[in-house]
Image 1 (spheres, rainbow, N blue to C red):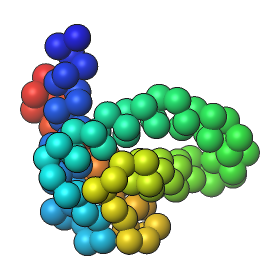
Image 2 (spheres, rainbow, N blue to C red):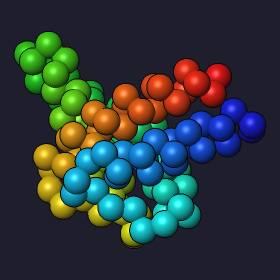
Image 3 (spheres, rainbow, N blue to C red):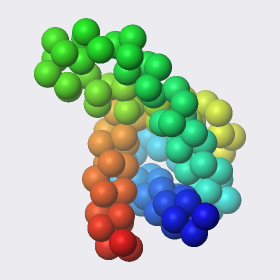
Image 4 (cartoon, rainbow, N blue to C red):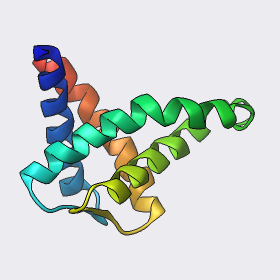
Length: 112
């Protein structure tokens, strides 16, 4: 249970930092960041594997680079599901997903 709360906090902090670095991404408040982190985790757990399965040939063809597009799509889906979290366009979602991954990786190593 404690690990889940730590991971949720790391994702919320990463989302907040991501909106500071990438233009076109907006979070209304800290509570919105917590909700977005929760939905982000659920989307990556439930929706992303299905999406990855159906796009596997494309991922194979692009040597895995299409995974970056999938990450952007999952971030855009999260923004659609959480009020107060908005993304202006897909390029912001794509860059935001890249930045989110890097920030989350760094924060995970810091807090583990």
